[in-house]
Image 1 (tube, rainbow, N blue to C red):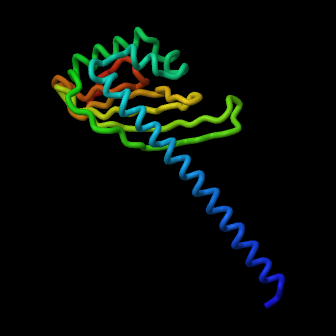
Image 2 (cartoon, helix red, strand yellow):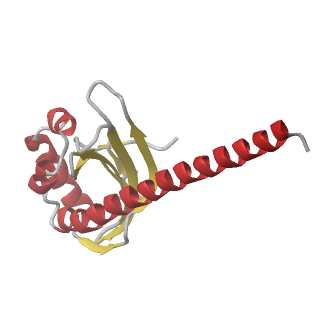
Image 3 (cartoon, rainbow, N blue to C red):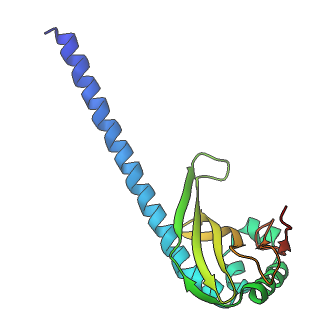
Length: 173
């Protein structure tokens, strides 16, 4: 066999090996990040939902969420959820729905995860959808949505058009 063919095959095998190593390292890091996000969510979300603790959510929120949903608005929305949904009865661990990591941005690298948790409240079940932003070594809520799965008080389900803002009932067609 020609020495150039053998050399090309050796180079291709080396490149594949290096590529697999890089991919495996990246996947390993992604798994660690995902587990970290789930651990944070499954520790904090039940504490927030147990008594609809707007202050706790606000304290753990990213700056963009704080500016788009001031504490007073969040408290008002949570009061409405407390009335419409009732207290938390059952929390099922959040499931990862997405992970997006970027680097070399103007603000540096960032990681955003999307998670959903199914919950049963005294009056109706709901899905809690959140986005977390990795800030330094900690997670911050970047988006928070409550989606009741059945009608609330004879009305169509309450939804939020903006994160943690006043809920509005939408009529069915």
